[in-house]
Length: 143
Image: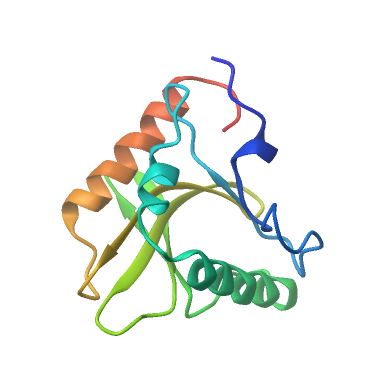
């Protein structure tokens, strides 16, 4: 399956704002069946400044320490898929999270984006992200 170019699916570095990243982080929307469902979810919320701030902090951290140790990033395995939780700064009781898949280096593909009111990630979110990653991988080729 032919995917749209990565540059058209880029979340970070911000394609509209800053062009020169501090470090190695590249974040794209995961494409499944020609769609980017996480992008659609993300655009429902007013979180762009918080998400870009979290990604910038993470990118600067990765530029200094390539292990990915950051308070803005955690990893876990769900249904055989390693997912990365990107944490945007909290806004009151609302917490925005991105769930992504790491393909290589620090190329992350966002499979799920949503706001919640607790620190725990609901199982349904994990299921959705893992199934989207598996579907994209089943399509073949690089993400």
